[in-house]
Image (cartoon, rainbow, N blue to C red; front, side, top):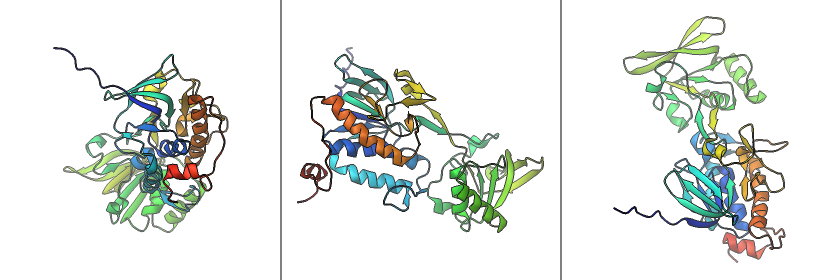
Length: 348
């Protein structure tokens, strides 16, 4: 029996790997310059960490949006890039990427989708990421039910007893957010120092002083289970005392355990699990492959969504020059350029 021949590759000017905020904004910046693209992401929905880990979390440093929920930011970006009709290929990790002699790239996903791309942008965040898990026996039996590593639909936890572990921004943000809404909050962190913003630490301490939050310096020891129901968690304090914490739900915010996955095998220069890029074009050590957002590194790099948007803008010009080296480049403004307004579908 003869084998079914694989589907022909999808030909595209640019392939973007990663559909988080920076990957989505890259669509916009390419579109303004008249270039088309496809996006691939290993997750089942666009949005990256914003959607997967903290959809309800407010973001305060997006220009012109004093406050914006993480999922709201993704929804707005999707609306902004709608005029460019960039197809999304979701739930597909890229497994192979190879540069051809003609300068184009052969790319393949785990599902066998193939691309023939003129240039590639890697906007893969921290790679394929997994939350660090609560390391107590039996925790896996309750994960996704009463033990959580992210907050989805915060309102369902109002009126409940919550135990929140962690000393970073996510943990403190949710301690502060749930204060006054949950029936009881116990915040547990393994040491006296916090990684969160000082203002958040001050707020958390004020809530503790006011009796709205109970704070324990210690580590998770064991689950308290009644039949098949989680009713709390035993915490061993740094002073050796054992605390039985009543909880309907346990949240653990220990950060992400990033894995670069196949990206590490594609031959680009790495530094501390990040792709080294220049700051003119945000190109990696392989010409034609660009990297924006948390996946890249350069002197002075700051892992901010804001910075990733800037990187995407400059990368678009770098990509245009790579694909069309003879084309004269000049900066146009969306407020005054009829060409750009036409691409955006602005009515005249």
